[in-house]
Length: 214
Image (cartoon, rainbow, N blue to C red):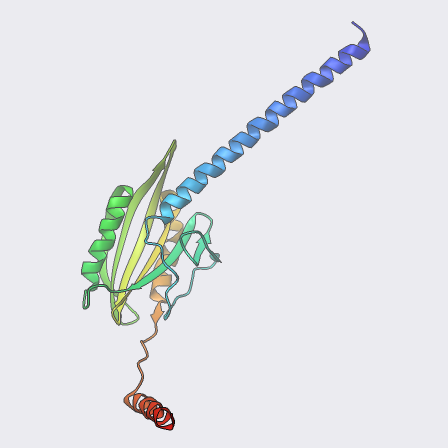
């Protein structure tokens, strides 16, 4: 066999090995991305999809940046940790924070695998009642399982509920726990603004004047 033919065969074999290696790496990367997406999607779907509520403000821990997803208009992330703020009007007038919190816990228990409540306490945020609970759970998919830890605050003011959820992988949660607690202490919820009696009367007078002119 000539030297030229040997060189050609060697080059062909090298090319085949290179292509096989690239294909293997690409498949591994795509599989990893799909698994990561599955974990993220499963984690986010536990909380009822909602827009970022108005009238609430808080100091997000350093290192967290604003982002969005198909489930949330706006939330904050830092590596594997996230902060999600949701809110809605109460459907049952006068419902207290303890009763509403039981519904939130039930939602987690029914949605997440291996739910385990670690602690629960009553506290105050910006002068209003708050129920704070901490728990672990798992996100499981096809060949994927991720242990998570979460801290959730439920706050009710002016017949509107606010839920602040802070979570990360279970093995990194202690890195974020204190910043999460400090963030919850920074929450401020503006009072609902109602038109004063004088303003309402003025509006009614203006409306009457327009009617008279007509």
